[in-house]
Structure formats: C-alpha cells, structure tokens
Length: 482
Image (tube, rainbow, N blue to C red; front, side, top):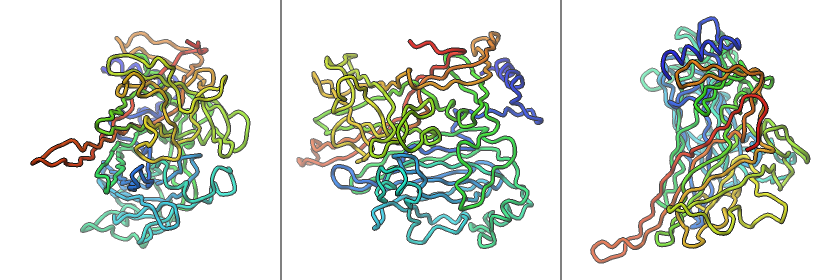
C-alpha cells in the first residue's frame, strides 16, 4: 500500500473512531508479515496414521519485541472447540518458548516443555501436563472420553506487556539462560501495572511422525491490533481472555482491491471478519504409483462463539447448533479439477454422498478433508472427498465453497477504500461478509518403494505441506447472492 493509500485508510479509521490518542491504527487485522498479538495454530494431533504410527505436535512462540509479555496459551479439542487446557505464559524480551503435545496412557494427550520460561499456575508437570475433558464431558453429548483431546487447535493471546523496571519483567527475564525468579511470580504481581500489548509474536506448529519419517509444518495465523484499549490480563485458572475480547470491535480486511473497515456491535464478529472467506483452494495428489494421499485441515476458530449445545439454528454466519454426535453442520460444496483442467463427470462432494435433497457439510470445528479413504493424519473429524480418481483424475486442485444462503456476516458502519490510486472512497452504512471464518493448510504424503540404489529397492516415505489459498467476498450494503 503506498503512502497516500495508507493515509486514506487512517483517515477512514479516524472517521470510525478507530485511531487512538497516539495516532496508532486500532483495528484488528490479519497481519501479512506473520507478526501479531494473537496467534492461531490451526491444528495439533497425536493420532496415528493408517500405518499405526503416531504423530507428535511441536509448538513454538517467539517474542520479537524487547518487552516482557504475558500470554494465554489455550488448547482446544477439534469437535466443539472445548478448552482442554490453558495457562499463563511469560515471555521475556526476545524470548522463545517451545512445547510438544504427545499421547498419554490415559487415552488422551499431554503437553510438555523443557523450556525455562515462567508459567502460571505452575511449571508444566515433569511427565507432561494432561489435557482434561471438564468442559465437554456430560455437556455436549458428542464423546465424553479423553480421546477427543488428541486433536484440535491452539490459541495464544497476548494479555499484557511490562515496563523493564516492573517486578514482573524482572522476575521473568532470563539471567544466564534462566528466568530470575519464576518461583516468586503470582497473578497478583502480574496484574500490577501491566500495559497494553504491542504484538510482535510469531509461531509455528509441526506435526511430526518419527516412525513414518514425515513432518508437516505451518506458521500460526497472526492477528494484529487485537486489544489496543488497555491490558486484558486474566489470572491463571480463568478461561479468559478469549477471541471475543477484541477491543475495539473494528476490523480491517483487504478484499477485491479495497480495504474494508467495519465496526461491529458484537466483538467476536470483528475477529470473524478478518478470517472470513467464501472458499478454500488448494492442490491434491493421490498418485497410486507413489501411494500419494492428501488431507486438508479446515479449522473454524471462532465457531464456538456462535454455536450453542442443542438443536436449532446457530447465530450467523454458522448454520446449526451442536447436536451431539451430529456436530454442528455447515453446508458446503467441493469441486475438483485435474492437472489438465478437467472435472469429474460425476459431480463432486463428500463420500458417501448425502441423501437426496441434502447438501454436503462440515460438522466440526477442526475438520480434516481426506482425498483417499485412509487419510494422512488419521483424524476422527474427517470427511472423504468423493469422485477422486475418476477417469484417472488423481492429481489436481479443488475448491471448497461455503454456501451463501447461510454463511454471511453483516457488519455495521463500514468504509471501503480503493487500493488502486487511493482516491475512490465509498462510505456505506453496512457490509456483508460471505463465507465462514477459517484457517488451515494441506498435507501430502508419499510412499515410494520404486527407488533403486545399488540394485535394491529403497523404501522412501516423505511429505509436503501447503498453506491454503482463499477467496474473500465483502460487499457494501445488502448481499447479492451470485
């Protein structure tokens, strides 16, 4: 964006009351540089693949600023985004924290870390801190077991930062590689004079299968300017803050060559808006000669804020409430093309196909689309894409579309600014965002036993991962269904 365009955008934000006394833009946005005050890690898993080999998940977060920070680390299971563990983590300036998620003997998952950064309520248990089922057992009737904790996603939310001279900063800052006084840290001390966070966090997640010899890594999605009106520090043991604590509830989204600035009556809508897409696009490979397979992760990190337990309609943009083992389903369509731009003669969709009159749907909050029945990640939240392999169409690309009749979010006062020339500013009273708020990526696995070295067949297992591409559709005023 050139200087003139940036000034135009700032002027539009000022008109919405979204610029503070410091002149800084105060509107949540998807940071294209991968740095932010909220990180969303789209998937973790400790499940086993079709060969029976288990995944572990490695997680990292980096504080690129010179200030000490307090962040909430939250793990959520993948069916209904029920929290399975959270804690407060303190990062000193320029600190890195790493952890691993592994399966445990209780049938669930645990998180462990050898990192020395300070944690409240206490450092993680030496053998790993087990995930718990307290928020879903006996509540949503989907599955009470700890098995649900074996896959899901992760949020890290910056709650506060601290002056260098504060007690918190002194206690958590490393001296010779170790924090000065983790044992002295309490929530009461951390709540003393924190200041507003300034972002600068980035992170990544790696799904590693040691026995299979594969690893898939993805950057965390970074949201910037999440809470610019005071600190949001909450004590360890409290489930706050959540993505609904965005402040102010103003979003900036780039769509169709325009910057769209919208103020929202409901806070969580601002976060949903910056993650809103009407379709997901990526490649797939299912080449039989190398036993190739593809999974897509499609995670909806704000869905739990709109969906209640029970039957009936959910709050838009989502379609239905969470109805036990049926989940909370949103209608979708999927179309595939091979590498020679042909689509299967039989309409695409999920397999098995739905009954006549019914649409294909995604029903969980962390969904995995598989392009071969066995899948790559071994997810229990999976949907099989049908029609793959027809007429030798084993490789190509696909487009997952969220159906417009249900998937819309209508914002309040909206300003749109053209990014071409910067002179065309259009003011309207509302805007309609099409689709659903999603993050995710694709993984491809290959198993090639045709490699010959010194006259011997060598078994070779390898893989790759790819960020999703999306389309974004925001229309000022009432929405017109294409």
